[in-house]
Length: 288
Image: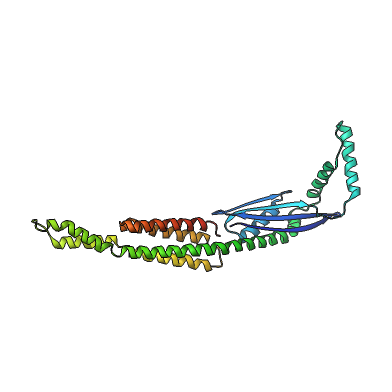
């Protein structure tokens, strides 16, 4: 499922305010994949970030970004800017470089100093980051929940459509055994007067064929799976993998119905059911 969350944490180091921006993005993926990027990688913080995210997200590709930035609109540290400029100018002259130092170069050096030397490490940094990471996860889950409500409505509609197709298949298969028996009896009519013709054996074969053509059990299981599928919509825990399993079972029943019925009308409706189930399968991949 897709989602986005962003929070910030301000860190005051030696009179310099560093703003740590935490952004979390998630996109659809059938399993869980986490990527963490930071200006200043810290193994302890990355481990804690992974723990917090995994506790709330079970499915999707999740990207976490932690970067330092100066809050906009704050006063300029003119003395620091001058000191940095003078130092760079001295280095330029000593190195014999012709191009004078410009403000963009000074800003770049100041930015590197802000993002690196003033930051904490390990547990101290995590105490600062933790509220921002937790808040970004809350925002992420809120956006994923909104998308989930839309997906739920779409899947419910498609499940209803599949249920209607199952009812139509049930109606279409009812006359198949009787129709097959009549067709077989017509073909055997010419053999009735031949020696060795056994009406009882013919009736037995018709009964066996009618049993092989019976798909009532498959239709019942398909209906049961559909009920289970819809019941999962009301769950308050992750159901993505359960939905995958139920969809797989529904596909198995639909395939069996198609192979057993041996009827053109039923085959057409089975194709429609397969197409609808495939749409459900693709949509369910987006659900945690």
